[in-house]
Length: 294
Image (cartoon, rainbow, N blue to C red):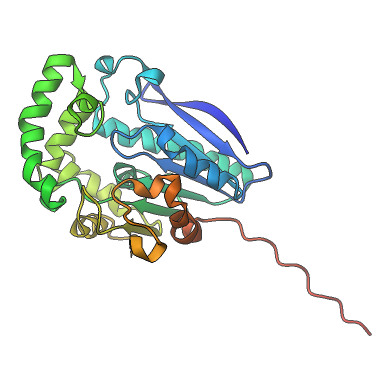
């Protein structure tokens, strides 16, 4: 396996990415779309694991999300909608590699990254696996989040952004650091039953164009979103075949999974049993039939 750092343009700026490449020709291409406030390095273990199994895997980072890649976060003008467009250009970059290799392309989206499938209808995605991707509306969140999130969105986040120029989630121990524009827009969406469609109702037509087969993985021990949230969000893709698959920790010898635990190497058994079978890959050619022996 080898890695290759890349960047690709989005709205006049650059999106940073890293390819994890197999030693031989790939059997498929996978792009891993990050959750909100999750750095692309978080997905490196899964990416390397898939590369060892023959997939070319793209990880990427949303604009302004990581200061070591994009500079001081307070200087970022990115919004949550911009991050969906970053996912779109990342998907186009991955699609080009899949086409060059003559292999299918799968989108693996974690939470916010899974929501971005609605922006990929023109890219040509052969399959999608959403992991813990539900609506961001607080009304469908896990009970604890449902209770305190209005305080976060209406008081804590605006005050913190005004004070330091970005959302300092790491210091507050609520999420992670985020550009101010991302946090403000995401907060408005999360307080509305229509989520992003509350500000962009025209996007429903774009979501309706998605016909990609989707496997939506969810777990009842998710600390952020509820099973109802997963079902609620799946209905935003009326023309896609969405299969809801519950991950039960005990079925795989695990104590818990949670919102982000799927991507941690200690839970790699989930990759083998629940992810790998749902990735689009080139099928091995069948050997020719044996010649009849006269």
